[in-house]
Image 1 (cartoon, rainbow, N blue to C red):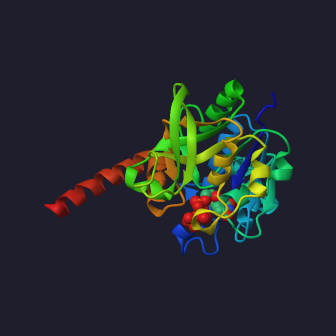
Image 2: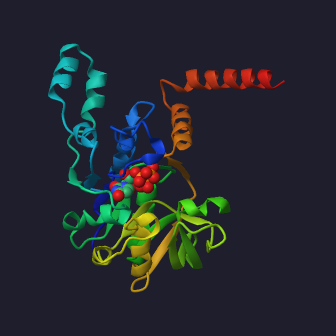
Length: 295
Ligand code: UTP
């Protein structure tokens, strides 16, 4: 069995839900307190045993490449001023095996993943969406890899969402359970209307895929929203190989959505060593003043 050692992080989308902030800036670089979203994702990959990471970038995404490179001027400045703690923080993102490829036209998530074909070769790999943060005791990517080590099958992370929100997600038609939390799937459907949705289990931003997905993606026509959809390719893959759904029980944060970004910042801020006490006091005071105004 080939080990899962490679991760692909698509980060080339327009980020239209976050305009105007994303007009000239990558949403994957939006900071959660003091760390860009994409750095959390890279950390999850490393904690899960991933050795090589490919980030799919596009226009306005140059800062992502710079963030994972050295910054000699800044490092010299911090060293000269004896700011060793800051120097350590700045150097944390260098020395990781990160590669980049450009998606010249953002034709959809499936098309972004297709850009990773040469990087991945004939190995199983994970796809980690650049704007989706997951919190759990064991990183979700590690959970998917552990599942693969038992099933040797593609496995897609899912989570229950309110029924009226199915049209925002890829949705699965679940079948029986192979084991606790691991479901067989009849169909994968992209963005169904609530009345057509086969369940409320939504695909979230972590996928473990076998390399056969590339041949399918190469012939994949545009689907929902005129985009080449990864969900459609996974549905085709499921017809020739078993594809499982892993029911994720942790917390998911959609940083690409304005409300999701605020909620993520507050949740992570409440755990940040420098911020947590100050932020907690602020939220309590805010709650009290809101209560007063409502009276
Ligand atoms: P999203 O649908 O959340 O990204 O895709 P988007 O298209 O940028 O966002 P909105 O809906 O317009 O606000 C999930 C991830 O896939 C990447 C995005 O960068 C994001 O991290 N993606 C999406 C690509 O890399 N290429 C694409 O063509 C589409």
